[in-house]
Length: 313
Image (cartoon, rainbow, N blue to C red; front, side, top):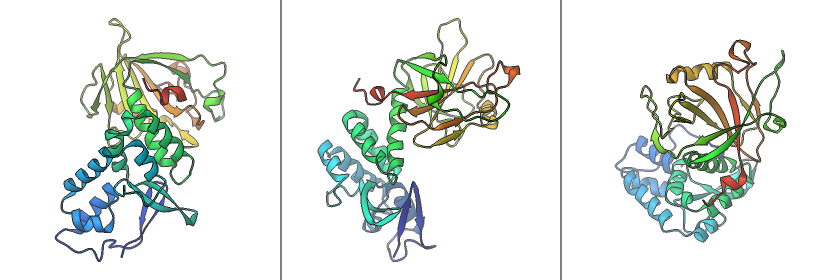
């Protein structure tokens, strides 16, 4: 017998051998990998632990065969036949109340790739549905993050606001304090997605992803030239989903130097947030020797307007 409880995005397994009693021609490692990746039920673990590609095909077919109404219904109804996508779990603080949630981050990515990214009405529906409960707020964060990566690859103008630290004592700076601050605009080019590879020189026209294993303070990077004569501009994005506070330390900014960005380039660290979410963003005290900037990388906030986040264009 195995039991799990969900607390936020963490899974807690209440025994050292959680899959005892599930027998077959597979290892506990195979069972664990299928469970973590797909949130598979005990029955599915027994059937597909040694054939994860087959199980992924089942999940993908269920997603691709679902209509918007089917998915919306399944997100509310535990009896709906979409158990490869949704699962029922009790609320962390009320064990007597249950709700539907997506079984795993990987299954969410399949859902995004095969359905959500093409259906903005569903993106908006599920974003607000999941945001409404603390137990599923992380899922709303996944939606926001995926949508932001999609938006930042489009040709558009974004408006960002400087986040600065003034005065001799630490001060909290929030996006709502930006009244009267001079904003900056960046004309983003249309770009293609490409994984980030440490040590590989960044190129114009590519939006680099998959920083998590390379640099925890950066979610993506975009490089472009405003004109042929100017140095390249590097935008390093950090996407903040629902957190109340985000601390940007001097060590964080200094560590970005490890990415090996060229000297003389324009470099900006941009914290991306939903327009309606106002986390407290803390930055280091300005360094007078660097023109009042917080280290080599000036810090900006890009609050994504709601009409842009769910735009059908």
